[in-house]
Length: 113
Length: 115
Image (tube, rainbow over all chains, first blue to last red; front, side, top):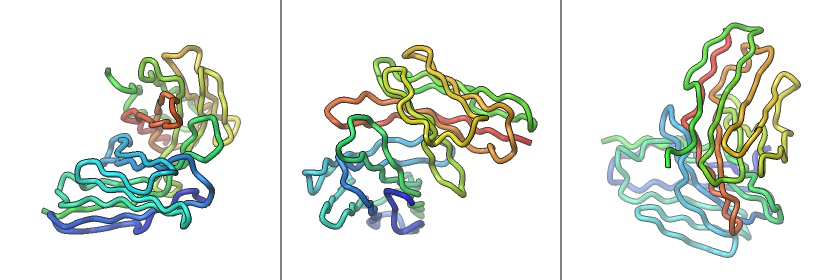
């Protein structure tokens, strides 16, 4: 089973609206990361939040982490058509000394102009 | 920096042929990862190397798949013999493991079609 699972699987919104994606995981983590994948491209790192952090901002992105619920959310504010992409959460398992990330299945975000 | 470079970008081959995918990681990175992405199975980690040494190859599907990293600037993923079910996009990623961050940088991928 996936360590990270995103919800919803697909999200369709209008430009200017906010988009919220959720990620749940099963085991303790060292950090949680969000990546974006545009169609036909590789994944691009967006933001990282450590297990001892609760919230982090980067531009129009806001990430929260609730380790008690083993969940995270990614909020994209004032969305643009260019935000259309798949978004993946990835977890670095706690206690490991190596950089193996476990990726979820992703949320497909479509932003209509 | 040019980022992670993969070649070829597209590969079309016939069942039974050998396929070799190539990857040049970002200079200075000490970890390299090979992933496979399909609609059905999502993004799967096949193998990863740390300091050129294979650390975890539990994701390698079967003996038909092999990966090497002869030096810090080059890695290959080989499929021999290839089968139609190997059709997928294969990504290489690299990272610098420091301060428990492990941010991965992905290449553009190789789209493999096995006929």
